[in-house]
Image 1: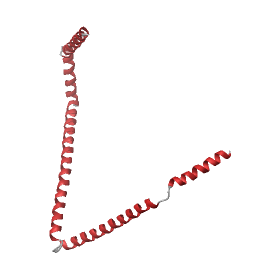
Image 2 (image 1 turned 120 degrees about the vertical axis):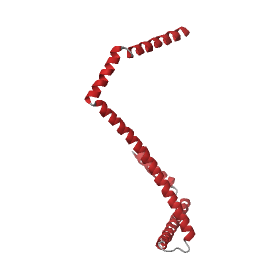
Image 3 (image 1 turned 180 degrees about the vertical axis):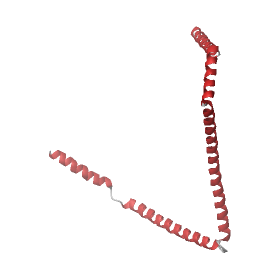
Image 4 (image 1 turned 90 degrees about the horizontal axis):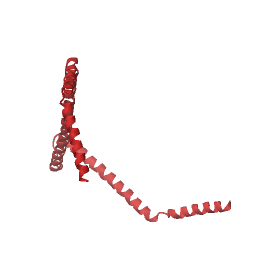
Length: 154
């Protein structure tokens, strides 16, 4: 087993060595230089570099946009907290331009409370029905009986 491992290792080592020698050979180096020269003379290299720069710029702009959106969301959260604190401190005696906003907040709170009460009533109604609901399995049993009888009549 060790002989196979050594043979394999030696073979892979030889292949890697030959690949390196081939890549460093004059014909390959000349071919690479010729492709680079052709790309430079036809403008392909310049287009490639501009495209690469655009992709990098687009990636950076996208990352900054994500960061910016996160910052806006955090700013919105901070403003919301400031507004809540201001409301809590001044809700009993609003002044100036806060008066209509505080009135609107109170109306919204009343509407929310009414809707929550309605939902609670629905839930109470549903929970009460589940105890007195008819047994659905009895209806299925009747169906099964009818089907069995119709099959046996044939």
